[in-house]
Image: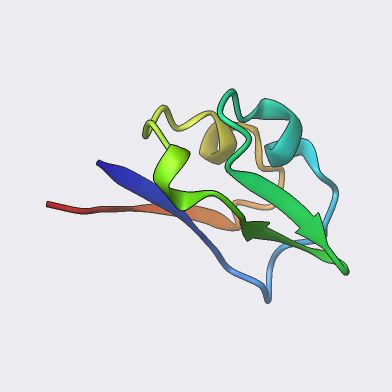
Length: 62
C-alpha cells in the first residue's frame, strides 16, 4: 500500500487535501498538513491531485 508524504516547506496548510481524503488520513496541525492515520490510507491519490501547491507525494510500501 502507499501513503502520502507532505513537503512541509511547500505546504500552505489550506486543508484541501484533508477535505479530499476519503479515509481521514490527513489533518492540518499548526500551518501544515500532517499524516495522522497512515494505516487508513488506501493509496487513492485524491490528496495528491487536489493539493494546489504540489506538496504531497506518495511512497509505496511493500
